[in-house]
Length: 589
Image (cartoon, rainbow, N blue to C red; front, top):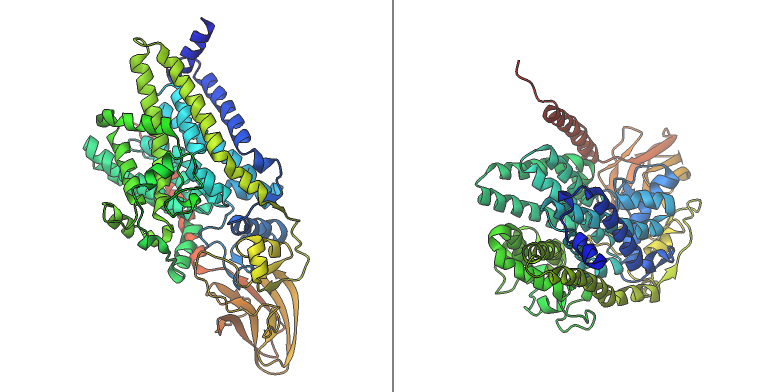
């Protein structure tokens, strides 16, 4: 009797009881335990990191955090990669308005990222719990949706390979929830835009593009379903609010992508229908037969969520907008194939930037998580009186899904542990220099050994970057190296009195007019304290100097960053006034 009552409690709709808060607290405890257990290899050794893109991703979290912590500057310029480039403008760099950035400041970048992954997993599961509650689903169905969201193959394999920005997907439940509420009350749209902007501040360009696509499709489908064209206006307002909240980062990213557009193999990718089986159902995710890397196609959810999603199509009249977005994402994953009806749309979205078309599985697993929760909830609510055993079956299914995901995806963590290596602390007191990485270093440390060199305050002139940034610098281990600061003609002396990523103070002692050259790539965002134009000297930074110039200060402050800050400040004032108007409507006199 007690067991039956306990099972019945798990299959209640919490919001219809007086214990809704208790239900949520219990669920939150379950989420914390699951995240800590599932990602145990991460937190058991916070200073160990793995192969593949771990070097690259940790590098782009370390540079912003250490720029703030050790140099007390905003993370605007990155002198450590390929001769220098915009740090805030790099789409995959972390920024001050991200969870992992603050954790990196406190615990260090690697430990901050690992702890951030665990906290983001909990945040995402809590968000999915609340989102499913918006639809009045039963408690156990909310748990199922949350587990599928946080521990599917798409998230786990990308994170294990070092693609930590994919954990930003955990903001999606909150983003969708606030957007759905905002369709009728605009202030909620602003919260949805905040969740959207956190994805670009956290360095997740792929997730941002898919998120905007998802919300746009939902807005169109809801406008058609409810015959309310005003929903389309809500989406426009969402985009405008997103631009306001992400202005400084967004404007710099747009400038960087315009100057260095990324074109990858996604335009030519043709994916077989077999990918759906190997991605979502095949338990041997590593040894596949479709010719794709496992981290680029895996979206394992298991049989039960897949079957529950399929059953939901029998209730398509109730859930068809969400099912349409799911089908759309599956169609995009097929790439540039003859049987891919959505490829023209994917092409318009800038398919070349997505690397692989199967990255649209990100959208798929999100809606599979929702669909499986919907389906389980409806089955229990409509069948429990006639078939009481269905309550026990539902609980058993959710437990099975948890165990199955742990068993199937746990080898991924073993790969991370096997290839793990230790790193030491950053040494900002060492003189800055740049080095060309050898093939031996590259093969030993993954991409380019960028993080290992960064620890010694050393840049990597031939480091890996997803953007085609040309390096014009001379590394110190090359024959043509003349120093990080030098005079073009060499008639004089230089003294570097202060160095930081965004600012260089140089005392100049020349006997005749000359050109001071900085061994960093030219960028129009660089300025000096003197009314002199920063020159482009064969791709490097330079400025004309005379015997009357005592000291020259170079500092990086790009125009688009200033413009983005102005847009954000003015926009926040407008949003504040708009929210105040909704909170305190004018009363009729």
